[in-house]
Length: 149
Image 1 (spheres, rainbow, N blue to C red):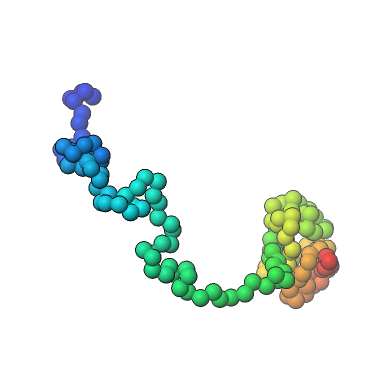
Image 2: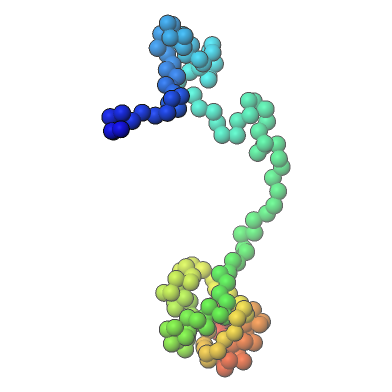
């Protein structure tokens, strides 16, 4: 046994179908594309969603729904995350800049503080919105919930 004797298992390797190599090959002439039409020509590619001329599904199904242009989408931040951040970094003020620096929000995000978890530190928290349970928990810990415009 040496490297020059190695071959694939018998029947595991097939030759590819060679198209358009003359009439003697059995696959010359139209090169397995049939006669005429777009599919027989070079550069043909079917449009995605094309169903052979039948009305495509995306046009058969009616439009529905509504996108409200005035909807405000908040990035939720829970109290347990704020508590962990404040204890790690020894903070007394948590605002959008602090959350941005620590990768919890993006620059354009509006922040809503939610009440999951418990707050042990006395913190001043600035955000765009607060849930009722979050405000209650912040004030019980001796902190302040300040709304940013």
